[in-house]
Image (cartoon, rainbow, N blue to C red; front, side, top):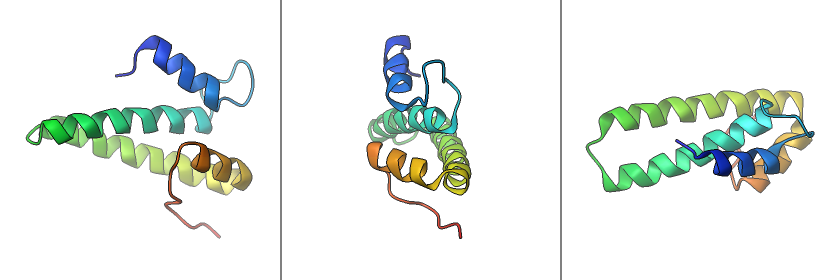
Length: 93
């Protein structure tokens, strides 16, 4: 779970305009931060299978958002992937 101030910083970096809080870019950025935190947690707690399931759900959700963004806005997708240091996960023609 992200703290309120940390979440606000992530939204500020990824948003398209001043009042944007729910675009695909923002959601991908928030999911990426949650995934990174949960990955570190699971490295220390290898038998936490409930958190592992949540991590897999978040990864799937992020993948869906990234697929959508790549299809709708290729330049925005490339910029976000570079900003968040994400590899390209899918190829949509």
